[in-house]
Amino acid sequence: MAALPRPFVAPRLRALLVAIAVSAAAAAGCSSDPGGSGAACTPTSPSAEDAFARERAPGSESIALARAVADRWIAEHPAESLPWDWGEGTVMLSLVELYRVTQHAPYRDYYRRYIDRHIERGYEITTSDRCPPVTAALALHEETCAAAYGKVVDDALRYLYEGARRTDEGGINHLGVSPLFEPSLWIDSLFMFGNVLIRAGERADDARALGEFSNQFEIFASALQDEPGLFRHAHNWATPQDPGVYWARGNAWVTAAGYEYLRVRAARGERDEAVAASLERQVAAILGAQDPETGLWWTIMNRPGEIYLETSATALFAVGLARGLRHGFLDASVRPAIERAVAGVRSRIEEDASGRPVVTGISGPTTVGRLDDYAEVELGDDISYGVGAVVLALVETSGL
Image 1 (cartoon, rainbow, N blue to C red):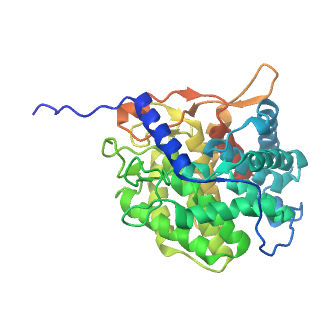
Image 2: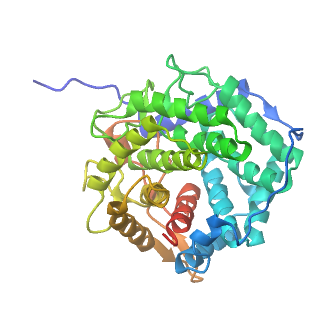
Image 3: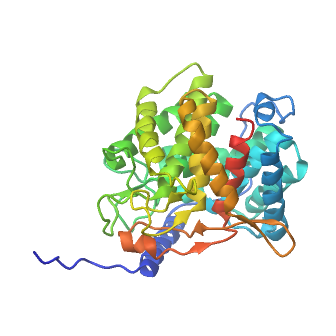
């Protein structure tokens, strides 16, 4: 039987449609000016005696490499020049973690300048992709109790609880308040808004924030997780998707955020059986898809050899698997996969003309599409979210 012609939306056009939708979301939302929260707060600074720092071996070679990668990024990308977006927010999150291990003030100062500049100019939290920078504001509020940082966190939670459009099942729309498309779920969102809910929940002992993440994870898993355990990219999106296509970085966002959530629950003496079971299914499929020669994952996980091996997804899988192992949700059988993943990531770190480490082999920004569309996404170097993912991986796997 002859194949039926399918609707075609070129990748650049699809990206343009998403950009238009994000712009509409920004217009529909509200920007925030400096202000503050009056919530009670006790300033708490990271310390070399913290369990987090000790367990991650501050003197290790992995932390030294993470610092070198971070130092180059900082030298090449002035904090004040960076947009309020998910890629840059991932870098800031990685620097929050690196500062917790090293107490090296320039890392904190960098993400503080970034947040301060956006507080001064105004910022918008109107889509999932506008949430990641808030994790740096959370860390700054914990350390300083400054009202302006508390307001950033409050604005994000207000958006997540009240502002974003939702699917019929209650899932937070990836494009937030945008009126241009029906609400849709993208797996990226579980990391983008998820880290805000998880860390706000931990910081303020906020059961509502943790409960919202649990609810969202179950909604997303119900709509997107297939029988093998892997997650499809999107649900209810406007353009076609091929069945059985599992995008690596999207799945890796889920793994990294999911085990961070379970860690916080465990610290409270709690367990979320539904989320844990979903992640266990996913991990079984992740381990089976790792390339045995390089330790990397293919950008479409279940189609080895068809497109390319990818750095950021591999780094994020290392983060998630390491968190699962470190906190007792996964057993030692995953350790070889983590070690191979870290070796694969290291193989993608090359030196620039000045001998500084550059993260290479990062898949560009990726919208939902057909298999051929993923193949058209080009690899790049020194891309924000790839750098952030690699620093997170080096920190999280150090001392394991």
